[in-house]
Length: 68
Image (cartoon, rainbow, N blue to C red; front, side, top):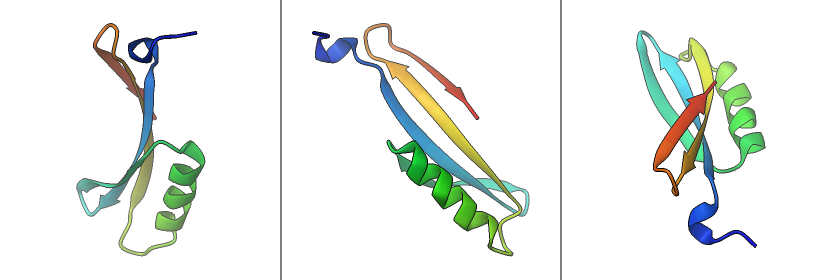
């Protein structure tokens, strides 16, 4: 059984483009919820783009990696 500090921590951020500025709209651990929020934001006229960013942190090594 893995120890608590051996587990990788995962979260998702939904970034919305308002004009020329990216704003974090939501940060959650549920990827499906993040994607759904991104779809909702795309329906808004004031949002010009969406990024859903997945971030993985490894407490054992202290390293963090992310991808869209």
